[in-house]
Length: 293
Image (cartoon, helix red, strand yellow):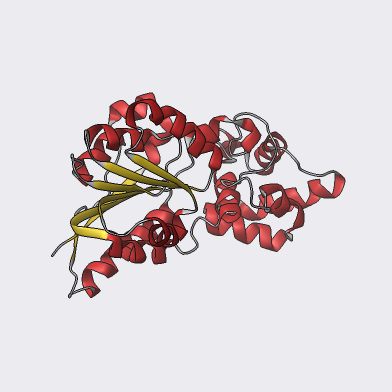
């Protein structure tokens, strides 16, 4: 959603921007290009590999105008306090998994290609998806898959996982994907989405603690918005979007001394042309809020 991000953040020269989730660097590159010749960008990502690749992508054309930091976006205030002071004219947080992560089977995010059951956005953290699959009880697995994946067959899937791991460890995304397919009714196997989608989402959210402190992050980041500055958050599933929506509404209603204007009452979705090129973007929803004087 590069075009939408550039438009809603009103990117232009002479301004400072914060990309809380650099990923492959697509949004960062678009912001740097539109803010040429003197706009500055500060970026964070918990995945050092992603930062390295983004730096290689941007270095030749934009060197000196961007600054990257290896950090979880939820710790953004620590980075800002230690590295710089001031405010930003636009802040972006894209909460989805990057294409680089999805397309690399060694990272274990996708069921399209078999790889280790990993799913860590930060490979340096100890907890992996296979740890949850191998250690949680049937009740705990069912609750996790239902809560974070909103999966109707969570109980059946959890039961199958526990039975299978008693025979042999479940170590790969391919193993888990096939197990899930066999666990659900036949009509569910050939629906609009792959039957493993929701379970993989649930495990990824749990491994990376994606919903933890999201509301607190949104509230905290406003102190770093310049007057007239905007915050854009892109989410990819209803659980995240619900938190973003409720937090935005709460901020608008409660912060009277430092009023915030909710710019998008309904989420912005990618255009048809983008969805055709990148089908994974079809579930993206962007909400934007502006800090007013």
